[in-house]
Amino acid sequence: MSLVEVIILAVVQGLAELLPVSSSAHVIVAEKLMGLDPSSPPMTLLLVMLHAGTMFAVVVYFWQQWRSTYFQSWVAFKKSAALVMLATVLSGIVGEGCIKMVEKTVFRNQPKAQIEDLFGHLEFIAPALAAAGVLILIAGNIEKRRRARLSAENNPLNARQAGVIGAVQGLCLPFRGFSRSGATISAGMLAGVPKSQAETFSFALAVVLTPPVVARETLRVLQAERIRGTAQLTSALLPSMLGAAFAFFAGLLALKWLTEWLEGGRWYLFGIYCLIAAVIVAALHRGGY
Image (tube, rainbow, N blue to C red; front, side):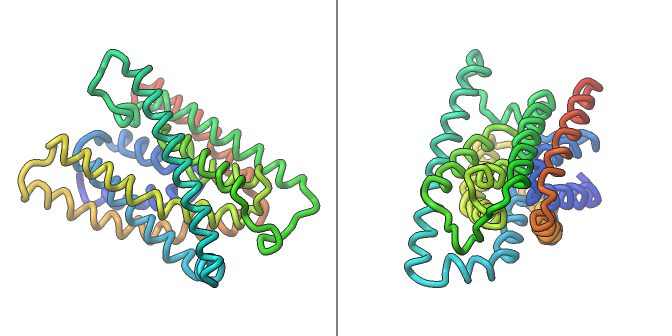
């Protein structure tokens, strides 16, 4: 894996991770087009570090907004923390349930197989992208038709809405291509949450969710014993750290763009993009990728 390939994948991850278009689908397609193996240890470690880079981008970008809302008082913090915890727990329950269901059906004859074994299959990514696109289109069109709308300050997020967002986030965990940000923001909008507040809450959940996901992926690499020896681990870690830095800056750019599109009422265009991407991914699969 060359330095140029690391930078390309970092930019793809950074831009796509924080846009509602599924970073995993874009990174996997980019890896396949460059002739790389998404399941190899260096690529697994790189993806883990890229997620960490975009997580820090989220913290930097939203910190001022979070401080003025979630941390403005002890009461506000407790309420916000309770909603984040509720959504995260539901994400874990729904996500783990979906993972076990897929593993027991698709891999019923392969007891040692894991859900990650499906992540590089474009034939599963294409329909997931299409599903995300349809959800975004529905949310965008419904939001566009609503006339009377309360502001985020006058219409605070409630437990039911947080639970819906958390449950939908859980559905995203086993399926590459089903955009986490696209699905959660759209679910919030459909549940009556102002789109700016849905965006803020969605990325707050991402910050909480990313560390355990990164830890899980890192543990998988170590348990598989695919990277042996300190020298080999270091050679894989250094380019991954560089990739995380590029993903961080690309993520900041993507967040600024996403906020402008949300404020401009063009959310539905991300849905159209996902549908087009689904067709392209399906075509690549038929082409042998």
